[in-house]
Image (cartoon, helix red, strand yellow):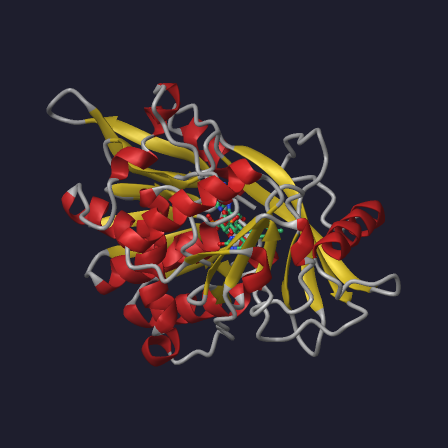
Length: 387
Ligand SMILES: Cc1cc2nc3c(=O)[nH]c(=O)nc-3n(C[C@H](O)[C@H](O)[C@H](O)COP(=O)(O)OP(=O)(O)OC[C@H]3O[C@@H](n4cnc5c(N)ncnc54)[C@H](O)[C@@H]3O)c2cc1C
């Protein structure tokens, strides 16, 4: 059996690794270079502090891989468990925090609900007086997406996966089978036809375009998100948490030597961008607002905080901020719409896709939450811990 994976980002390449290790012939088609989509633009956050059970389950599964990454793949991905701290000024959000911590703890996540004054134990310069509630988990952290992608790619190649960069998929081809149904037969690329029993859409912000090649309409919007590397007035401690102010959306994490990565989305309008043509640099006005909000949250970011660098990339956003992972047509599997959490969830996603290809089901997570037709259901639970 041959599987073609469309997209050489973290999802496609991790999937190639697990499929190949399971004995499946795997070909990755990547139109550009590995990681050229969202993966190389991610901040690298890894957390289990989600609100929906399905996302917590994906995190738990993925974190088991991230924890052992160096031992398994022989690559140090700079995984630092400095924790994530969420803070809120809203009593209603604080009440939600208490419920989400309950959900997380049911899955064995060591998160806790905190009074803001107690959160200062983790973030000494937090302006605790402004806040009414917080949650913290010491198991969360950050890693380097570039190194993680390289680790998976090398291991996938060693296991026998074929990774074709500079190869764009131009169509997904189906053929009629005996039952009268149509089933995947392969993909057309700019370098010719590649036959396959399964095709996996792991095309990140391009996922909607690839799905359309399979006559599927997926609600995935590429939305621009920015990151600034800043030198704060007070050095940001390397063991301080990735801190999220849930009302403004500003979040900041330790970088190196006291620098911080500051991110967040603050505009009223959130237009869709063409992944072929969007501003990949960061905006100075945006960075000024990000630092202002970060300064409101914690006193590291004084008036002389300096922006050193920055960039922007695309989240592939679904209406409820959770992914679509399913075999949507016979032989055509979507692993798309990861919003802001596709990097951290990639090892678990890859294992789920491997299960779907090999036996049509998985015990890793309840895939009901990741169906593409869930958005019409009134009881669909949107992920609320989004950044
Ligand atoms: C600013 C920013 C910060 C982020 N921070 C985090 C974070 O802290 N933690 C986290 O978990 N996630 C984060 N994310 C999200 C994360 O980057 C994505 O969810 C993840 O990288 C998705 O990986 P992917 O493999 O699905 O997609 P991508 O990395 O986008 O890969 C898709 C690939 O498909 C290729 N492709 C497209 N069309 C074709 C075609 N026709 N033929 C062949 N190949 C094609 C593209 O070239 C691309 O390389 C962040 C994203 C951004 C933009």
